[in-house]
Length: 142
Image: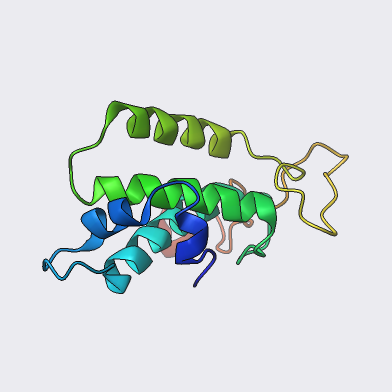
């Protein structure tokens, strides 16, 4: 799924840096597969936290695009294994921001915060159905 273009990504890093971080074969060009994989990882990060409050896939609104741009930059550095301190700090800050997402964080049209304060139903259920078998099932007393 494409959320950002190469031109949008170059708003947070230079084209030369994108080439350096994706060009595994020394072609001097952006490796689109590597770029797609980094963007896919960025989207997966975002969707992991957003799925609690939003229906996926998320629309490409400005807040979503900006998060994906920043996260893609981080994932491009991660694939090289040498992560500058400023990129790691940025990623840590983005993860904090994602953990704090709520229904109004991304400004998605038609999404209203849940006034009841209850969970939206996403995630893991901790309830279980009633027992289906009687107390003496298979000769075992409970």
